[in-house]
Image (tube, rainbow, N blue to C red; front, side, top):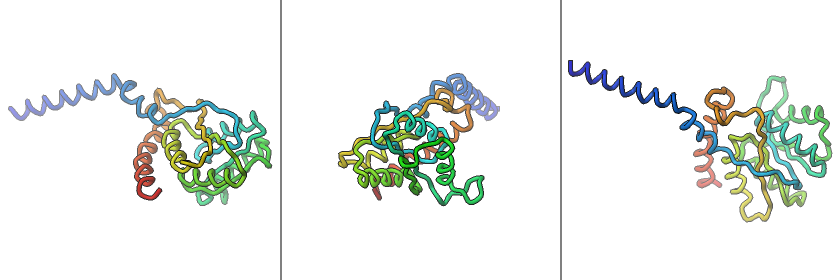
Length: 204
């Protein structure tokens, strides 16, 4: 009898905790997304940097280039990855999309990259090659904090100016746990975040 009462008490407490978590989910879940977001204002510079990680970020970067035709754009992607188009990597698709959007070919640079760390190294290398002084790094909202840490680490003491910007459309940080795309993105970022911090400290 005593055991049944203990089990009943545990179930009651567990149900109460669960009920509170559900009722106040917007309070305790929202910070998981908001902590990942860093937004800076776009200022015209020499270079716009974007990876092929998502279509939303690519379109946002393309729109910035159209509004600022004197800028250049570095598009990064992993040529090893497969896509629904046979024989086409994300970088190949980005080239096709750039043509469809009528982006100026003489302003575009496509380079192979396998991670955010390689993205930063490729961007720094191109800026030194071309003599660029300022770049706007474009990504998705939930990717921004990790991306900023990595880029700032790579560009430390380089005297090159970086700005970090993201689009707003297509993302739901106030209810990310209810949207499959947002949920997957936030979860993956919190997995990648400590891994990349450790990597920077150990490998650099």
